[in-house]
Image 1 (cartoon, rainbow, N blue to C red):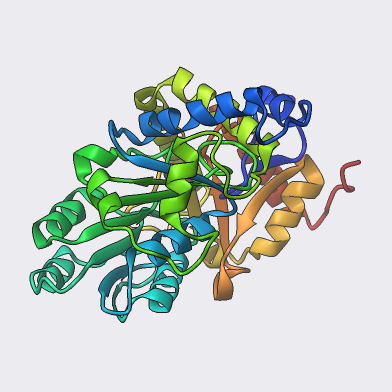
Image 2: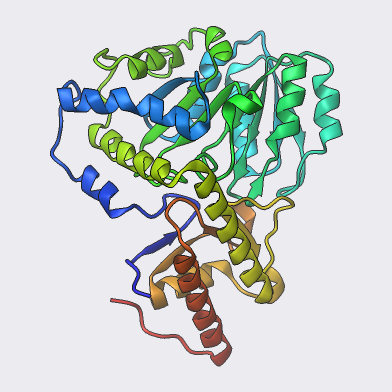
Length: 370
């Protein structure tokens, strides 16, 4: 198979469709031009279709998913509020770190990386009725864990708490139906499962949660202002990254042309295929509940250094993967199978992997790619 190099199989950014790249490279539009205002006018409705909501308020902001999470907390929380954070990996810890900047009290229920916090633990905490919000990372790319949201959403709703979901690595690839679940705030970004270039934070807020948004104490991070600007093209707050928004619209068109059910099924199928193939090679996913968008494999039992393997994959075949986070940098390989990644891409990766491991066994390496 001929693949474009580098072949991005990271937890984001991911492969861009040619038409998305063409949209990004189009003529520079003014932020207040009729053409761009039409793009802005279409985007909120497209986002609602992706997150399965009929009425969510939508904000689109130039910036990262981390900015989106901080905007949500800055506009939702005050020093009088308590927040419950479920943490089972690096990005869950980040949620707690952000929450502490804005809430008066943050309780963290932790599980070992790649493991779920027991449902009894968060139900018991929520039964106290003390929490304005519950925050969770839907897919943590440090471990490949997917958090099952159904029971947590029900428990949060019963407790009168707003469920805030970090969907940066799940929206557009893992099943997430905002209205059905009752998610209060959902944050994602452009460069993961939506397969657009990095640089746009997307925030969907239920009507009920939107009524409770507060003054963030910031101009740029005020979610209420950005909802008004995003849903009323022509209102000005700051100049967005115009061409990124144009490329995002094309990426969302591709997502919706495929259809959410078909897209979720494709992600699940590709994830299962990859994990089965890696297991046959002695590499097992570390997550208790593996996600359909990214898989993390422990190489240490095989005596393989992840930094060496990533270099080999790139130099031999132009495949670029993720490596472990923090102390697992040399131990874990993280393979993204989100967005436009296909079965053929994964088969190409497996061929490159087999070649690298065979070369390791022979004690030889091939020259770098040109």
